[in-house]
Length: 576
Image 1 (cartoon, rainbow, N blue to C red):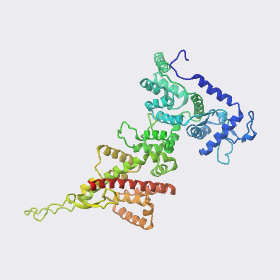
Image 2 (image 1 turned 135 degrees about the horizontal axis):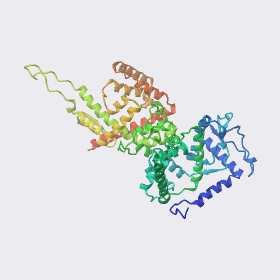
Image 3 (image 1 turned 30 degrees about the horizontal axis):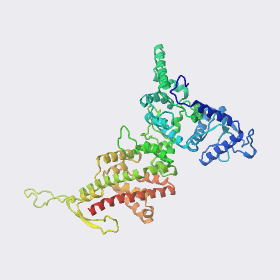
Image 4 (image 1 turned 90 degrees about the horizontal axis):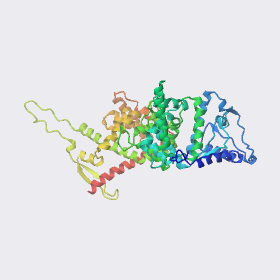
């Protein structure tokens, strides 16, 4: 290889050494027992359900004898396809946990090492994983880079995948990106589509125009494919890290098993929900960076730098196993919210769960910015509607007499009112009184949105309409605030606890008052859109007491921050 492809950077000695170490240590049953007990402990600690590793009795083990619990079952190689399809889901979750959580994975998961148990264990496990002689480890940095690579591969972002391969030391930093990206598309896109070697061959024939039986198309396609292969060999100085050899073998083996149960199986797309859950839960900076890229990166249809709310909804759906796809269901569409995805209640419950800690931490400041944008928009439109609504009408003009009995119309927004403004140092400074019109006061506490903020608000409201409904979206846009519908929406949020402040709004007196007002508005509103309270109540009722407490804390903190922003704006006016 070094003679004919000297530009290749793979350390073949290290590669073979990794294999030889694995084969040698596999013959030592004391080592295998340690591996087996380590894997068993890791799977228990990570709460893996459905699959178990037999307990080892190390006091009875020697280099030539391994003693463990007896597993009474059938090898996967002897199971029918429908059973393999069900077992694949369990085995896949276990392997992804080993690869991306523990960093210690079973490197020989062939069908003979996976058993379908005749009877469930006491813990309810129905599958057993045996023979832990050949194991491999992967460090935390490489785990993070591989998570990023799966995300980019799944949504066909090959430009970013080049960066992942550089971090994984598969490609050098000075590689020719312009040459590599098209080759990645040709080599990896058929693989992501799934279906194993057979489907891969079919996709390659389509790609190179070799579907026709004519000699010219076959020869031309083969020449093009050969040229691309030579380009990879001669012009792309890739290298294969030593641990990749064992990892690749394990992945190919597992995928081969899965294809018996499902001929269209593709491990990249099947593993994406696990990766999505990983993004939601992990607080480490590297994973947070990948999460931020998913939720905030600029798209073709949206050049704003803020949170893409539709991507947040899509990610929550991805984590629950519902994935929106593109290009014939072959790749993940980060912007697509599946029609049969999560309900508002399920999404809220997931967002407030322990498994979404990373997401909540990342969104903390962004949610404050969103709340401030909508507070200003709602306040400004609400004030405008209020001024129009409460301005007294002008008396009609009388024939021949003109306006003699009809004084000029009073404009409320032209009349200055005294407003009490806090001092520049909060409560320790005596408040001051300032005469301002309603419009001046509105501009002070809720400054007009700039162009970028307006576009951002529109995108957030449009995405919210898909997930929450038209009434909530119209409220966020500030449309029809002086209306029974808007009042019903606010009261419903307060009644169900969505606005937090459980100590204040959760008292019997407060709840009775809110219920009474809600009943009045229900009678006043003749539009027939009376399901908003039911939707919110259903979403809140699904939350546990811990999740409700967490929501209350989030809303309380968010309210404090928004009020502090308002106080800061007012204090600047007062001290000016």
